[in-house]
Length: 138
Image 1 (cartoon, rainbow, N blue to C red):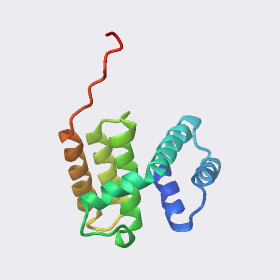
Image 2 (tube, rainbow, N blue to C red; image 1 turned 45 degrees about the horizontal axis):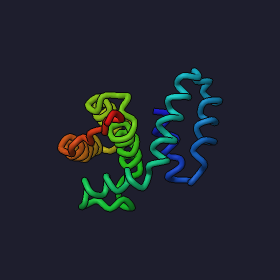
Image 3 (tube, one colour; image 1 turned 135 degrees about the vertical axis):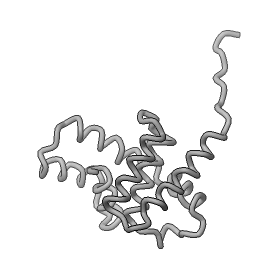
Image 4 (cartoon, rainbow, N blue to C red; image 1 turned 90 degrees about the vertical axis):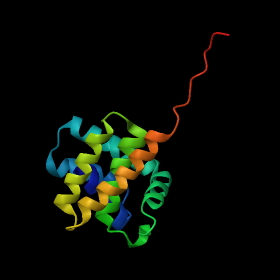
């Protein structure tokens, strides 16, 4: 939730994500482990923003990013970061969490939209071949 609020504020007001997260942490007296995990999510999503947004646009062609509800877009950004780049949470858990965030903070249709986009991205990721590591022994 803190990661989502941080990305949302960055998206709306263009405030530096690190500063927004720090302010939230201080205002709410959050546990350092919560702040550490939220920082990982926020900075990871922020660091891969162009790639993540390209995935969103590819999976939701009928919805330009500029016209997409900002809360939905930022929920998607966090979940896509977790699914494609972070991999510490099982993809299905990340999708379920995103859908729950969409139910709580989005519109009536947000949860279906988020679920559909993430399902498409997850299915595409599952179909891509896993690169084989080359052996160092020759």
